[in-house]
Image 1 (cartoon, rainbow, N blue to C red):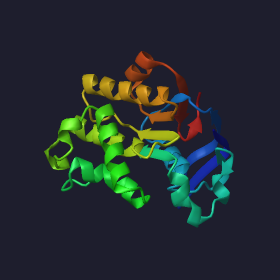
Image 2: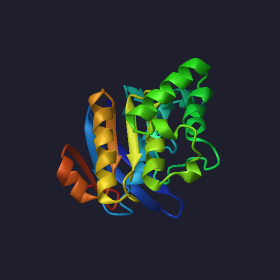
Image 3: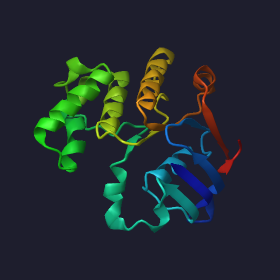
Image 4: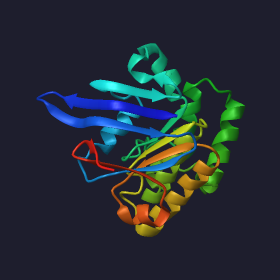
Length: 217
């Protein structure tokens, strides 16, 4: 499903973020992307979400070469990918419902179907009773669950999560990881970027390790 071949990403002033990255993630896999801060984890996820283009190399998702994808096709391509950002990127003044439903409104989904899907995903993340609450009134763990609900409400084939437990206590981090595994069991390919080795050891699974922008393991 996801294939990278000799991918490089360089920034101005000759800063190399990723160097010669080659790996494959099969459909339905659960993979951890790990490495110390500055290893290139976020850059790699941004490439997979097509927020940035590689300097060289090939990235294929579902057989489609992202490096040759026209700009006009990017929004359509992203419909199949859910992205959970490290800083959530929720709109604090909006309600939980509005933050999640907005994703489907952009896609042109009917209002009745939007409400049905939002209620379903809030049930999955245990926030049914928070549907009308404003984001700014929620705890950090609850906001993370809203971010997850927003990412999966469009029923993506791939879910990318950038340090999703970085600001959570150990118990809440485990609850979030359980959610990711439930989503994976439903058929979604999941890649979680984290430097939390305790979580990786606890849950196991595929491991892709980066160090100084290179594939270490």
